[in-house]
Length: 388
Length: 63
Image (cartoon, rainbow over all chains, first blue to last red; front, side, top):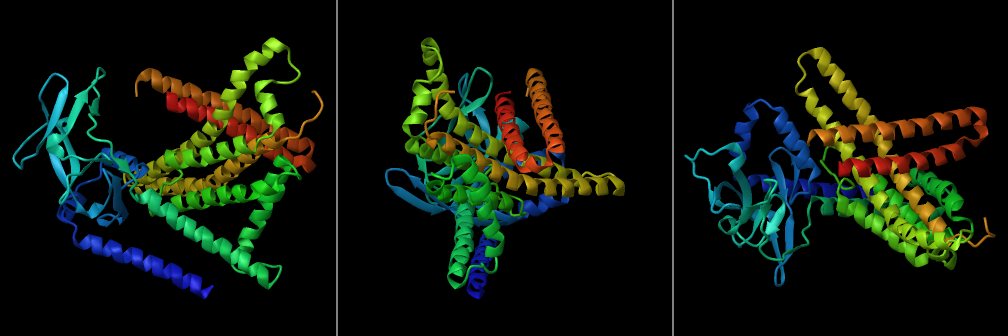
């Protein structure tokens, strides 16, 4: 137990250390200080929320303390560099043809309209830039935007980069995995000493039993549930821990990232399809107990249903967490616009209330995801019974 | 967001809210009638509510 705590302390110290070092070589710290004296506007809060929902190439503990993260891209070979190499460049849009726009560096004396201004981050050493979160193998002079019919600007792609970067979401996923590993390693070793777990395991044991007795056995059945337990436990605790981590003020938003929920849903889908028995496929391709023409009608519907089920898993988790974060952050933003002490108290109370609700949602979403996953597994291994 | 989108989103939320409300209300009735089946009713309630919610969110994203 002691060792675990010291390991965590070490990890945290490393984190803080790198944040501090990143702060040192930060070039536009002055710009931030300047912005601090201005009053916050609703647009700023909106921008901040939008920014939070997106993944980032750095980890920002608090305003101004940025920790750069490695950027790994496949561009005719793996290239690794730190996101600290990227410096902000302000640009203005210049129209060259009817529907094409190029960028020019914004001079200090230039005055341009607000919507013609943009910015990107350019690498100091290499020919890369980050434009609205996307890594491109070009600098601002080579980038081109195209206006489509609806008047929206679209970037013309330059080269096929494959982005494997350790972004904020990826880093946090790793940390959560380590935490989960430590927690469950502790639980399993404590069983060697005796039947009663010690420490944090005392909290985890009833939850493990809850998943077995209330989710796996009723939905999958006594006969088959064992081979699915490992996945159900993993997915439940992963989602729960990640959701709880999202409630900390570290600005983590992992399950609010559709790629993460897509992967989780995809694993559920693959396990369902590859462990399904004859009875399951029979119900999809040749529904028993209905007239023959109906069987042909049901076939595509059922086939589509197998994809819609994991799709809804993906959307549900993503949308719930995203909506929760947006509502919570909007309320926190409202606190700063409170006109008097009464409204300040009201907003504060509302934020606290919704924060507590979100803690419940964090558990509920993990429960629902696991529950529905177990339900789909149960349908896949259900044994044949007489015609209904 | 255009006005039809906002109206559509509103309709979706009303529909999903009514649906989940009906499920919750019926579950309350059922629990009052048979308190010993509470856990089973709750499970079924949450699954049904989650399915409606999923459709609601999917439609909200399309709007």
